[in-house]
Length: 314
Image 1: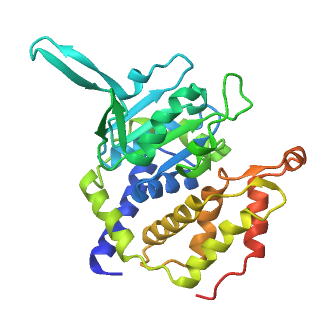
Image 2: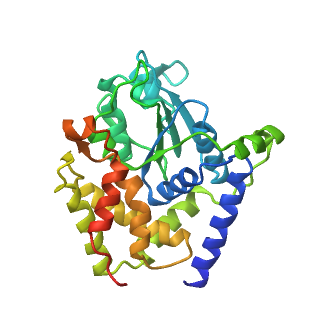
């Protein structure tokens, strides 16, 4: 790697250390949240209440010196509660925009599967276009912009499945589980939530790193073909009614490049692709009714795909 890239790699190590001051366990979730941000993409976190989803999002935002807002979803939330609205300003004698909480670098959408389906279009536009539309006028969102959406397991009361179109806008779906007994003991004996967090990056630096990853991390034709074959295989599986879309190919490529960069390399290996395949693909496939009845999981099928698709030698 170039000297500049090595310096950034050291920054990432410091970033992990800062987040660890408050966040215990769930290493994969922490890593993938950071990867998603440096991809300029969005992430879906699933887990029961109390496993630290909000703390993780807030701590990462603080260490990145990014503005952070939280939107608590409920069946009665209104559009203006998310994006804001135009109001009359008595002093200016004109209508002005009062921005909603979506105008932040990192937006935590808490329990997105409690949101009324009609409001999902707002987040589709925000995640895809990095804009929101208010009274017919399009407003750009702060850059960088990342949505971290949390959801409780679907079988919980009062939740509904989010649309397939919206799922496809999340680069990852990460499952956050309960901590181990040792991790819970660490929390019980410490005051992690009060530990000050130093700012390791800032929004301008994040944008620079995103550009460097896009331009400077090399991916060979053979590794790119490996990605394409993996995604294409999801469309051939008898367990899936619908396989991953072409958007998954781009997502797996971007995630693999960023994973490699965070690992201190300027090239992608097949193992990078394998590491990223699970979080990239698990939410983009739809099981057949028969597969659902057999209690098949996306992870089991992805594992079979990775065993079947031949790895390139480089």
